[in-house]
Image (cartoon, rainbow over all chains, first blue to last red; front, side, top):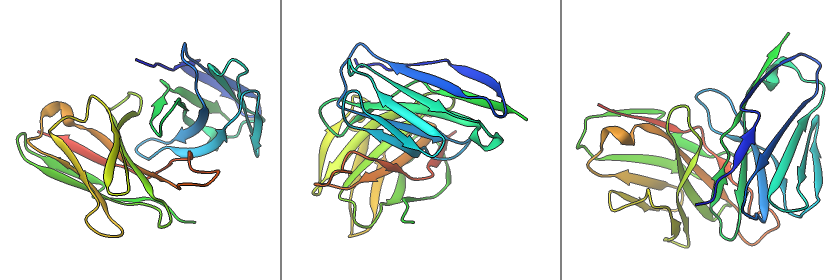
Length: 110
Length: 116
């Protein structure tokens, strides 16, 4: 079946640093969503991407829909302590079903 | 801001019992979903629901599971004869239909199901 691999699996960064993470697959997707999940809570939608090559920002977050449609990237600039959490990508190919990535666990050191 | 709500937040049940997890989707949304997340793992799709019928279901969503929209606001997931491996967080999500934002799915806070 379809799989999404996220990297890195986890990262520790200093407050103020920029963060990059990505999501790759062998399958083509039509939509990418990026979510943040805090412990014990539901995923919160951060950014939605609809077209190959699209670059979309939401505050300090910027995400890109890869040209091959098999990958997506999320950048966080000037990280702050509340950025801590797990970031998931999710890809949709033909229906309303999303495949979720394995997650990137982010820890920010003050 | 409108949000998806779920009840209960935590459900403990004995193996073999039936449970019903409840969700109130965002009011103008027409597409509804259930996902689950086993502790420490990724989120997995279970089922999507539109116009009072199942649109798509995963291989996880077998005869043990059923969904229903019993009234104009609630959306439920019933799990019959629960097993230990059903222990997980269950998330409800909803999305619009027929708009540019139709593919944006908004999640509720989840119900933690513990089967003992």
